[in-house]
Amino acid sequence: MRETVISTNQLTKQFGDFIATNKITFEVYKGEIFGFLGANGAGKTTAMRMLCGLSKPSSGHATVAGFDVNTQPEEIKKNIGYMSQKFSLYEDLTITENIEFFGGIYGLTNKQIAEKSKDLIERLGLVKAKDQLVGSLPLGWKQKLSFSIAILHQPKVVFLDEPTGGVDPVTRRQFWDMLYQATENGITVFVTTHYMDEAEYCNRVSIMVDGKIEALDSPDGLKKQFNANSMDEVFYQLARSAKRSDN
Amino acid sequence: MRTIFFLLRKEFKQIFRNRALLPLIFVAPILQLLILPLAANYEVKNINLAVVDHDKSPYSQKLISKIMASGYFKLSGYYEGYDVAFHQIEKDEADLILEIPDHFERNIVKENTEKIFLAVNAINGTKANLGGAYLIQVLADFNSQIRMEWKQQSRFNEAPTIEVMHSNWYNPMMNFRYFMVPGILAVLVTMIGSYMTALNIVKEKEIGTIEQINVTPIRKHHFILGKLIPFWVLGIFVFSFGLFVVSFLVYGIIPQGNLFLLYGFLAVYLVGILGFGLLISTYCDTQQQAMSVSFFFVMIFMLMSGLFTPIDSMPSWAKAISQLSPVTYFIEVMRMIVLKGSSFADIKYHFVAIVGFSVLLMGWAILNYRKTM
Image (tube, rainbow over all chains, first blue to last red; front, side, top):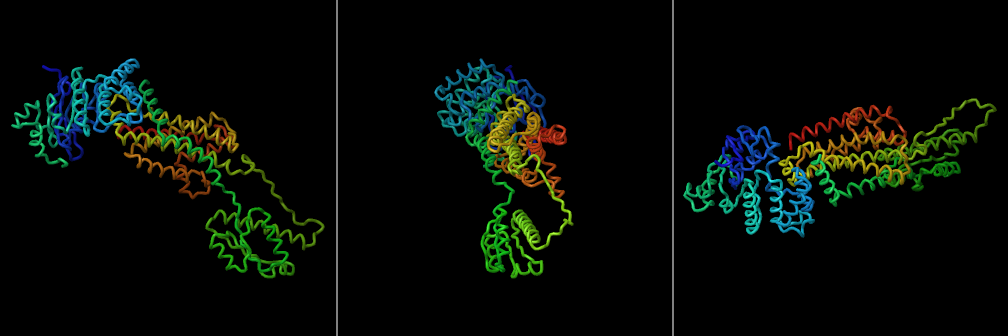
């Protein structure tokens, strides 16, 4: 039996009459890349915000890294990393300053910060740019840096909300290499994406339609189940039945 | 504690790196302190006087030269008739018309009485009122002068006269800037405290970094402290700069009262104002909204807090509003401590009020911050 890192049971979020996330139940195992798919407006971001302790569920339960989202959101925050679709490092701070700041607020010691910062900058090939303002970096570099900072404190899970939107294919490929490396270090990756080639790279994929999880399996399993050649087809078959997609 | 250290370091770096914000914090207050007191001057000089002299006698000439010698008036010209002179008021080239009737001299000499007509352009009420009052004073003086000349002095002065002696306290030279500078300084600190705080926090909302902060283990009170402490320090700094550099060196104002008392009051006041900034930020999603809302309130603060117009002469509803503005208390305390040298006993009512405001604003802001972000 594999170790469970995220587990949800009938997790629901309701805004007035609108049920953004409708009784979703699933588990995510340690060290896997879990793809969290769905059309725009399907409720992915809402579900993710609940799992990060940013919003309280209307009903249902979930635990993340062993802590309850209802009662221990602060404990969860110490054990997760998060990278949103909006770039959220400080553009008016340098690369080094961003690393120091986020390292510092996750409680790393000065020594740890110095080591990790050096290591990270070298690994990303940013030695020359380390004192440059983050705002001046190209998008691809920003996203790689953002991810590296999100896992600086060795979280148990890292949540990525459309991390590769607008990034070129080569950089996307490099980004996914980074995700694989992270899983080798025991970090679980929970990622949303609209790129179906990226969905193929996931260990398991769930597809949300109108607030519910309609399918959950490995990419191969899903293709078999839906009698499809690619994830693209699987997604299309499920998502076209959606009533509240915005396209 | 370590978290706050990292937050503060980040904030200070960002503030000192912001090329739009920095001049706003340091240069604008100095310029405003230099320019505003000069412009907001209530002494009325250079009142333009149009003269219609129908008499053209030595007496009317005497009167006119006496008026001009008072120093408040500037002759815009002599005109043939009232209509022509009124045209000057219409063109905004005259503020007052003095019409001296025909046979002015003859009537005074023969009948001991004469009327003079005065027309005032009342669009600028202050100028008109003061100008009219000055002119009437000069006329009264002229009046008694000719009486002295024409009337036989009695051997004993039958009518006892009371001569009024007065002295001006706290601002002996009646220098208007002494009154304005401390008040403007109070408003500047208010603007910096409220605008900067609100904009800074809303900016993080707008660019999305607040979302990132919210998923970190930073507690909300740490974040709030990290945001407010830098602006509290900046407020104290700008205030000190205004007080010791601009107001002392440029205007020669030496604070009369206890500086610890002044700074103690400022410290509490800034908590309230920063709370106000934080409160605005919790209700706004964009910097544009935050700017408009704070501008609205700062306008009210400027106009209703006794900076330019005395609160005592406001109607009672306006007085009530001014009592609800923390700025009112700070401006008063500034003037009391800096100009009068008031002690704590004199400002204790203000102090209680400002503690109340600070607790209320900061408390409300923190509660709302917890709910909304």
